[in-house]
Length: 157
Image (cartoon, rainbow, N blue to C red; front, side):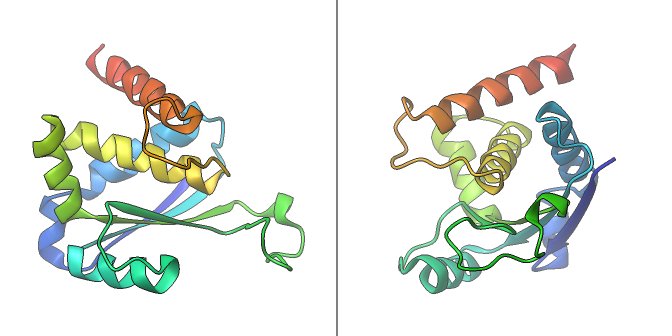
């Protein structure tokens, strides 16, 4: 079974992304991707905190809905642990709950669907997937939407 470490910037955020929902969704995603022995950390923050992170790590002065920080980065000159294939920790995902809720309104989807989408997106990034644009024709975004659709089907069944 995978390990999911969930933290919230503020205690009130737990109601907006319930711990049980986050843990079970990440477990389902990792199971779907055959990464059942993995570890992932998820942190939920405000737009203000996300804007600081986005500027610090990406040089962008705006908030975003999600950032992923992979434990193993092939662009680094070194890796930790020394033998990356032995690492079970995939990395950290940071989600702005403010942005997630705006996405729900903009795309007319429920919170659990958008939370699933963001978690899938983040985990795919941790596993090395990437995209240049947010165009629906991007292979990573196609994979993401296929997974969200399949996971929603399974939860309804």
